[in-house]
Length: 204
Image 1 (cartoon, rainbow, N blue to C red):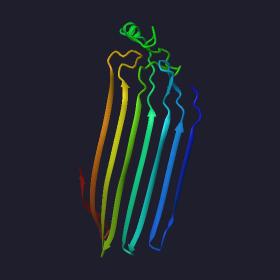
Image 2: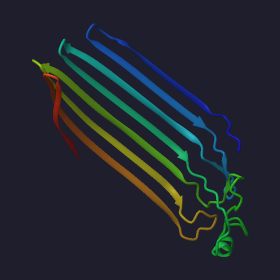
Image 3: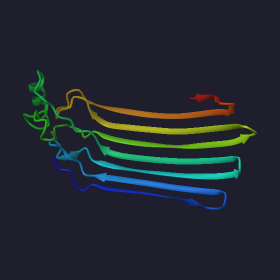
């Protein structure tokens, strides 16, 4: 196995903008060549191509009230994943006859990092969201509201579900699209030696 040309960069900066506003910003990127050979198409699998960003603002509205807003987003697009077969099953002969590589449907050497697929499995994903965190003190009580919204989209293109160089079963595409909203309210305080907290949570 040889892993080549991996490039990874990460950065983070934080600090005050004014006497009552602070900010932070971070980002990362990761790229790498694939190390699993798809012999049937002369391509590489198990590469890395992803990046992420996150920004945050903190507002000190008063000595007892804070507001924090955070936004993040990340994305990837990769040829994933290579698989190894341990043995030639009962359908091996039929798959070899249908293979786009004459006489070979798949490798049975698991440590050669080789596979035979008639389609490269591609994975694309996007995730992002925003969180609003509000906290204030009311006398001896603390009230906190946390509001969040997230989107997650994943597209697995051309999943070769027979895991061979034969187009025997066809290819499958998996799509995931999830939007999530959450709301949390908390009220907390102290009564003598006891700390207490009550709240409610909504997910939809």
